Image (cartoon, rainbow, N blue to C red; front, side):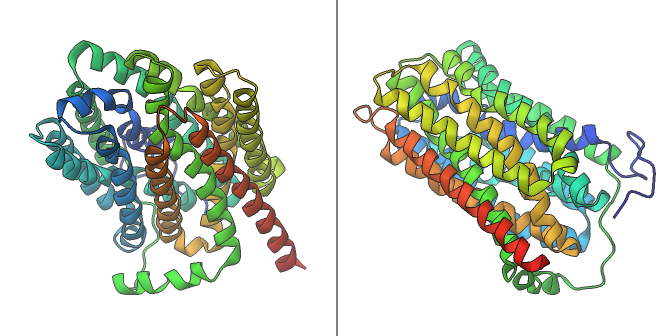
Length: 404
């Protein structure tokens, strides 16, 4: 539906300003990756193996996925605004728990609770779909996530510097301070956008089969899931590759780590400009092809003996660029298959994306060893990207059959 009330910044009687949506989604991205350069140091602090410490990524993503299944229907029934306020509040409490955790077990518990910040990502997308029709929604989601891409681009670099200067806890203090800012902005600016519904909460969950029976929903969902899965595998494995395979310092890992986010920024910019003109299917297809092509070139260089941090991280910009085209457009496709279930579709689709990402992140952590170098990670990401190409090709063929 179109926005009826004009948007006024810091006026909760109107729909939210795009700046608020960017900040909401950005906090979740920062929470996911700012501390990744610190994982080796955190392993030493808690006297545990790197594979156990890496669970702070995999478990976070797994809980993140489960929460998205609940957040969508809850927000469709109770509204976007109250769910966002409660979610950010819980995130603040969990962040303090991470800072003062006395053991790895306690830290991992609070780290899982921190995943509540996913309300910003799920409902940021749903709010956009509440306000705009499909092609415009893809464009606006592109702009929102383009802003979000700035955060992971600079987040690990900031995290690495904070770790070397003040210790790993400084990353979580920064998250806490930014969480307070996000809570204020949400309370002051975000007016309700969800349409009123008379259906019960249980009825919202009973509408899941309507989405699950849609082949186009699955096509868009899998396109996004494989694209994000490649990136999540990178999140789980790149810190190890940077520090153990290439011997980089935490600050250097943070610097190189932002390579996909740099590509993601420009890919989202392309989505914002051309999604309406070219259509979401074309954008998803070319984004998936670009991602697979970049990983193929990275693998080829390694096979030819060019094994360096620049060769590994440099070609990850293609993955980010492709994902910047795939994710906003595939997300808009998911939300538009059944527009009256936008919140539910955002939650269910996001759960599938992040759940697959959690599995690939954990797999990367298990397979990576000093002897194998970066090969397992590159192969996992390449296979996921190729499956993403197959998923969107299927979706395009299915759409043509439906429209005949």
